[in-house]
Length: 105
Image 1 (cartoon, rainbow, N blue to C red):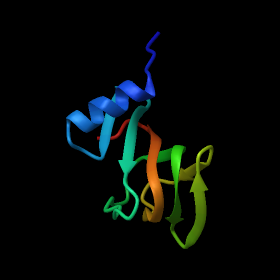
Image 2 (cartoon, rainbow, N blue to C red):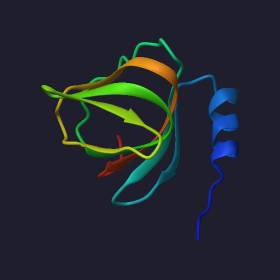
Image 3 (spheres, rainbow, N blue to C red):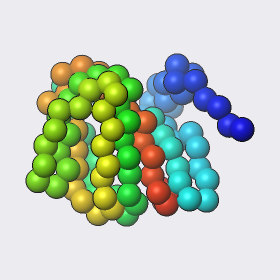
Image 4 (cartoon, rainbow, N blue to C red):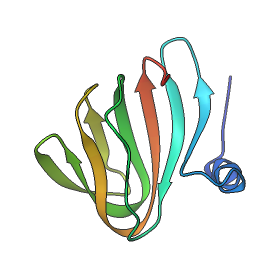
């Protein structure tokens, strides 16, 4: 079994000075922690993989294609491969678990 603690992952992400930390990579999926501060800009581009976002904390708008929804702690969103998407109007520091399938390349 592989088990992780969010506080330890957050500390590792900060130490690496990046918005994203991939912490699990397996044959059919990868998982990472994505962090954006209040007011920051999400500059990600569409991915070649399907992905699922699980919002652990924070508040923002998420636009996927031409649909926009408010996301906050407990929100789960699916983003199909190749579809433009971004978090915006981030009003509270955002921490999101990201699951890619197949693994992010």
